[in-house]
Length: 408
Ligand code: ADP
Ligand code: ASP
Ligand code: MG
Image (cartoon, rainbow, N blue to C red; front, top):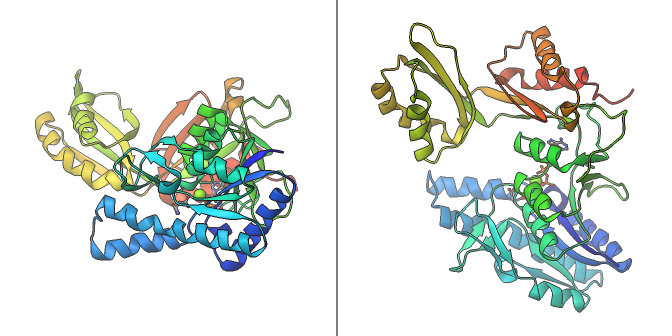
């Protein structure tokens, strides 16, 4: 007998029919003698609907009230799933994040989990009940409702699995595992049987939204056995996130290709090329709580240089405002900026032992006439910034160039 935490995403609980199917699957696991804790998201589209509603009232909704509201999506699905379980004779009880006491900090809309009280859940499991917990939400120490950021139910699932020392955390979604790239963009993408935790962390942080990045961080920290599976298939092994490298020699050097369109690029033109200039530009950006991702400083000419960096699109306008006085201090020539960019990345632990990944990537993009605007690398990834309009083309040609397409 094992203790399993199962998380079902929005599409998987998107209608009463689908909720009934989830209940049947949970019942099957229960019938095999396992203890089951289920985490659910809001019905698909519901969180977006609620956010849009808030924006009709306040252009910049108050974060505390936003969390009071968006957390209601998951409160509906825990009750419906518990009803569906009761209806088929499975004893079950629902819990909001606050009722479990998933304690978080008070950073509304992006709170972090600090601790989880397992007491109530353990008592229910002991009494033979299925425990159904609302994903995405918690409570701070003053009793305020908080939420964990978009896609946060994944993190609730993994955090509960860590707290309960579950044998496995299963993330049920609308694809049957983690693919070499988003299968919606590249139909030839293949499901990975395993992916290392390190690779998954890179893929999630570089834009593969199949798992929220914090859920992967949690799984790594607490060594949670994590699996991604389809909620629409009866059987299937999905993708297991492993802590060891696959020693299969035939395995491709690159495991996956990630992309995102969440960033904007800012170039400060003609700044004096002298010590301290990066700090003069990025200091105020950091002070304004804006995260910077990629940074490029060009070789100087005649004592002047150009300095480029990327920020999240949500922070783009704010960053431009912060830079206005900086332009005056530094006597820079001006600013060039745009948010129509995409970041495309190739990820794989095989890069550690294989040379030439970056050159293959650059050649492949050049052959399509795609200009690379920025580059950054780490031990297991190469990322480039390109014009947004070439995103899909770039992902497709790279997928093919690195031998990731499905065998015909
Ligand atoms: P859920 O509502 O179940 O949390 P999400 O929409 O958050 O589901 O995540 C699943 C989606 O992630 C898939 O439908 C797929 O389009 C997208 N996705 C992006 N990159 C990948 C990838 N590498 N492998 C699988 N799915 C991916
Ligand atoms: N319902 C939340 C969202 O749409 C959390 C989740 O689905 O994981 O972001
Ligand atoms: Mg998700």
